[in-house]
Amino acid sequence: MTNAVLEPRSFEPAESAPRQERWTEEVQAFDSVASRALIHRVRWHTGLSQAEFAAAYRIDLDHLRELERGLVQPDSALVAYLAVIDRAPDLVRAALTTC
Picture (cartoon, helix red, strand yellow):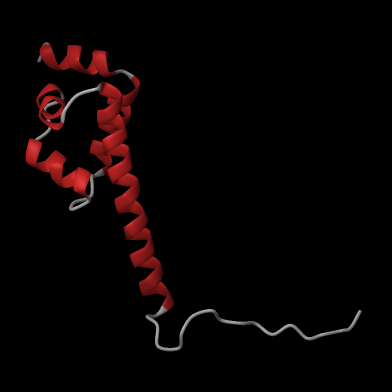
């Protein structure tokens, strides 16, 4: 076995964007895909169309469409609300009908 010197290598082109900018873009892209998947999965679990889901859970239909297309990001409150809907959809609907 030889004592080869290992040199650090970069797999990035020299003209690429600075590392922090690329990282931020990659995280945003991942967040967008993850958010879209979360919203679509929760709605799919309920078996409702976009219009039915929006009406049942009092979410603006246009906003829901934008979320599912990845045009906007959900805030943390909406993510939490979707998690509750995913775990107990009937309970959430019952709570909303009493309001």
